[in-house]
Length: 452
Image (cartoon, rainbow, N blue to C red; front, side, top):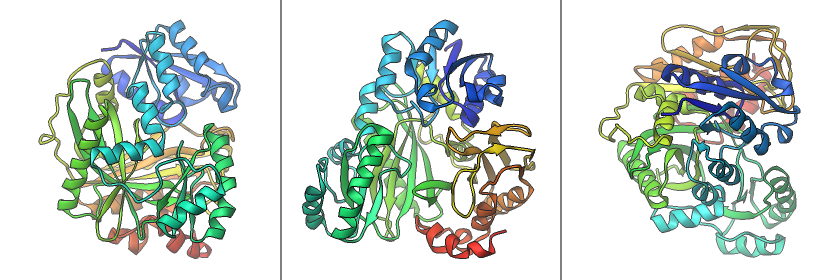
């Protein structure tokens, strides 16, 4: 096992990784930008190194400075967290070249799954269902129009690289496609350095359901049940839960089997997530693979009793998984909401200083955050400031605990999405467990006038 690791990330995920490392007796190294000098995660680490200016490309995306800090501190491994460099094949290769363990899959796997187009091809070869679509990059609007005619509208225009809904748009006609193509291609180039675009058939009434997997370097792959992530705003998840209240047990087992098949086919190692879209009839289709730890991993931890960061560290150090698929039981139900520093009506970021901060407490309540009263939310990074998780022996109890916890959650000095989350968690459609990815547009946005 490693004696010291560097965390190439910030905020609540850095704090989360530090907590597990302390439990395991592993020293931690934080890296931070000038804007994060006084951040909580920096204080929590055993060592900390400034790696640059506030701008993300001059700090948290500066691979050379991160490697320098790792070598200077004597860190044997780097945990990338999620976002930033976590799925960057070049960074993983750079770590390997410098004799530093990258806590994640091999660079070639990151490269293969980092392209949604290549991932579609690979999953089709593996026998995993994929959505009807185009498996080559579209060069221009004319190629897109021809491809669209062969599939039929409505369609999802997507960027092959990256995530977070950037470069993605639903189009219902040729006119909408032509209008959307250049703008989305340009955004993808700007955010990911790759403007490749492709088309997929639009799935009506879609549910976003993903399977968490663990895979070691000895050929063992274990599915850790699934998570429902259908409540999203701007194609980014807001509420997640484990397990899905929508699918049947038969569909659940088929999805778990498909995820294991996919991981074996590509020779995957470490923690990962196979994401699916599921239609109203429970037909499921491969969406993408996240080759890292997910923001929503705590709900899986809550129903399995596992520490996924600990499992990642063990796999990365070459240990065999001690778990078996049959031994990983699911216990109760867990829900997670993401707390954002944003205007709940416009979803625009709301940076500033937090003047008062109180976390909810109680049975089945878990908080993941890295801010406190006096902390400043800067405009340089993703506005997510924390996560609230509740567990209950039943979904109903987990919902009740979440409702109470959200009422107790207190943040002052900045706008947050807490009013939105309170409204969602109390909504009858959510309580029924029938929400699709359209929920926010269908139910929340029309009711903004009554938001607390």
